[in-house]
Length: 235
Image (cartoon, rainbow, N blue to C red; front, side, top):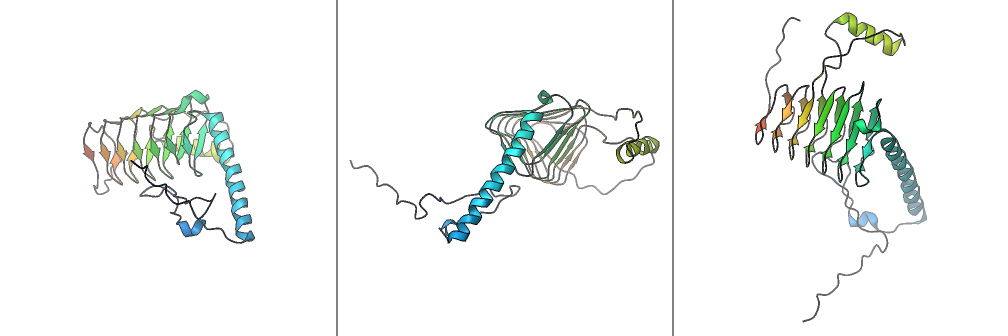
């Protein structure tokens, strides 16, 4: 029996068809075969320069990440990735084969642990002063916010002191803000624009709908969404 015929060689030779990751919450446009065809010397020069610049920028992002967290060599970081960790690198970990495009912020000893095969979309902010645990195979869309803390005090005088420390560089003691751990179970999907606040546990396999505000636990194997009108109460 004859072996199947080999596919024809690419007309682009060493320049292959590029298929950039693109879907609901992945940045990057699709590039067609015609876009990869060889052009004049100016096109070649521009492509070479763009490749060099992106490579240098990518190395800068990776080195900063490696200095501030523990990440598996198979991790892929987006060009919009940022990390701010004022604790030791082991306070932030990223598991094998994960893709992180968003922002990780671990402050005042906060811990962020991301499991294997996790996707975190563009502009997503994960901000911890306590502990945020993300399980295996979790999909987190773009513009999602995970906060295991109140970010600021309810007392306006303490907020003013904090603002003075940031803007006017005033050195003044500010009490710790209220916080509680967040846990997201395995194979969850957190859709675009969702907010998950302190003390919440999302059970395995569950879905949090786009734009939802999560302030309590979500059981495993369930769908959670919120579209309630604004409510106002006195402090």
